[in-house]
Every structure is written in structure tokens, then in C-alpha cells.
Image 1 (spheres, rainbow, N blue to C red):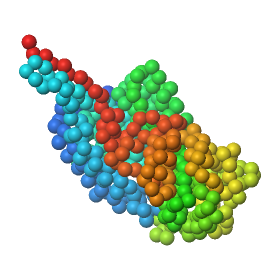
Image 2 (cartoon, one colour; image 1 turned 180 degrees about the horizontal axis):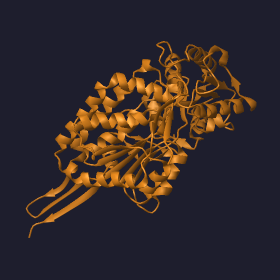
Image 3 (cartoon, one colour; image 1 turned 30 degrees about the vertical axis):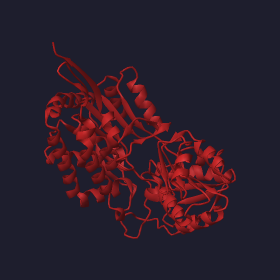
Length: 459
């Protein structure tokens, strides 16, 4: 068995190395989680909530270490300070609504019958987390799963090996029992073995479409419920009545923040013909104001992509689009830190079409294509012309217009005048190749519990 290496995008060095568990050790971890689950679920809800909140509070105390480690692992500039805002907000919201979301629904409580629907923890929840927002994406499932009474086994991406270790450390130091929340290092074969042999009662995976397909194949015939948040190619649509400056600032930030490595990042923009030229001009100026560089430098607003092979995918898409007639508007010479590897200059493309991969396949990098449209109908058709459906961003001055357009878009979330955002009160979900299931909101508790009906009769 080979060690799993974490290659830092900052300088190409081996930042961390861990040996994956062998099959016997992995099975033992899963069995320990199962053995610990009933006692954890038997604790009062308020006690579980307090321990989860204490775990997140302990994580906050580790901020300086976590932010530095995060930059070494996946390249996000330290100036952005980690993911604590979202981690805290999501934890607080899910804990605040837990009592009402998990409360039994009484149908009848009389002298003859007591009939009600309850929610019961599924058992052992397996989280397979990604590297791009490694703390946030874990928290989305970890918090409701533990609060609802499940035990959790976490497998983090190889690019962010230390994130799982820090989460486990924080929660254990706060008093969450070791077997209730375990961080494990697994290879693909062992991961698939555990899933296919039904060691888990729910599997939540965030990652690529191909990864989601592998999880589904492993779970086939086990009836294990799955939550799959997969690819995205999220569109922005700028209507004629949009606030142009706000649209440029938000959509371009949504496209290029975190080097474009966002599940719900903006990857294609459609602009009404009356605003198109002005939008493109401002978008280019906005992009050229970025500074690509070492993510530990205070002036860097754009760091490297998480791995040079991810950057190569984006380079290939850009080169192919240009060969097919797309026009690049950003001169890479403006970004001398572009090294042909993980450090990649951002790019804005026009003269793009849906025959180009850069407009149809997930890029997950700092590139965006911009197209001119004549009306809502054309924009809706183009937004729906995608195998993905996570979010869509509509720019207009009217709620009703945004809602009417949103109702025609095949997507999980409709935004008006914002993008690349996650509201813990709303379900995070998608359709088509983006996957299935949902996290956060009260529905997030439905994913990690099952209904149980009680029909009690007096005689």
C-alpha cells in the first residue's frame, strides 16, 4: 500500500504524507462508529448540540494554524482568512433549528390513540469531502449528522489531508467521543469496499461527476442513501435593467475567486445586447486588477490552483476554444506569476459558443466565457443548455421577473443580484449531473434521519 501524498501548489513540495488504512483497520473504524452510535443518539439533543458547538468553537481557536495550513494545502491566499464565517454561520443556524426540525409531528393524541411521525438517526454517516472549500463542505453534513444522533466517519480529499485531522482534533478536544467522529485516510479501493459492503447508513460525497458515479456503482444494491453534490457550470444572466457595476463586480468575483475553484462559481455569463459591450469592458478591467502571486503575500488576490493538473485542464479548454474562434481578452503577460503549472493567469473569453468545451464542461478554474443575448428566452435556453444544474444568477431590478425566469431554469438555486453564495436557511441542492440530495436548511436534517411512524392504541 502506497502513502498518499499532498503536493502543495504553493511550491510543489510534499507538504504532508499519510498511509491509508488497510481494509481490516478501515472495517474496524466503521464498526467502532456503529457501536458508538446508539449511546450518542441517546444523549439529550441539547447535549449533542452543545458538544458540536464546542467543537466548532475549538476550531475557531485554531484559526492561525488552520489558515496557514489551508494555504499550503490548496493555495487560497491567506488574506481571505479561511472559511470561518461560513463555518460558524452554518453551525449556528443548523443547531438553532434542530429542535423544531427533529421534533415529532403529532397527528392525534387522544384517549384512544397517539399517532405521530418521528425522525430517527440513520446510524453511521460517511462524509467524503472535497478540497476546494474543505471545512465548509464538511460542516454542511457533519453538524446536522452529529446533532441528529448519527456517528460520523470522515474521509477528506488527498489535497486537504490535514483538514480532517484538524476537525477531529477540535471536536475531540471539545468532548465529542473518539468513535463518534472519526477522521480516516482511505484509498479508493477501500472506500468502495466499505460502501459496497454496507458499513455506512448514509454516504455524502462532494466532488466530480465521475466520482459520484463511482460512489453510485459501489452502493448499487445496498439501498444505502446517497447525497451527491457533483459538477457545476453555473450561469449568470445580465438583463437590460441590471445594475451594471454591481453585476460586473459580483459575477467576476464569482467566476475568479478561489482561482475559480468553487462548486457554485460562475463559469458562463450571458449579457443582454444593450449592456454587452460595457459589461465586457468593465469585466476585463476588473480581471486585470487582480494580482496572481504567492498566496502568503498580502498583495496577492489570486493564488495557484490546487494542483498543476487541474490548471492544465483549464489551459487546454482555453487553448481549444481559441483554436475554435474564441477571443481571449486578458494578456497573460499582465500576470507574470503564471508559471505554466499551478499558477494560472485568469482569462475572459468572448466569441464563445456552446460547441466549445469551455462553455459546456466544468472548468473549475479562473476562466469565464461571455455571450451576447437578445432577450430572456435566448438566455433561458442557453442557461438550460448544460448537463449541470446547481445555481443560476439573474441580474434584474424586479423580484417577480427574477422568479419567473428562475422557474424556467433547470437549477437547484436561483439567485437575484448575487452569486457564489450559500444561505444555511435554504437547501443546498442540484439537478441533472450536479447530483441529488440536499444539505442545510431543515431539509438537511431530513437527509441524515429517517421517518419513523408511531401508531399507539389504547384498549
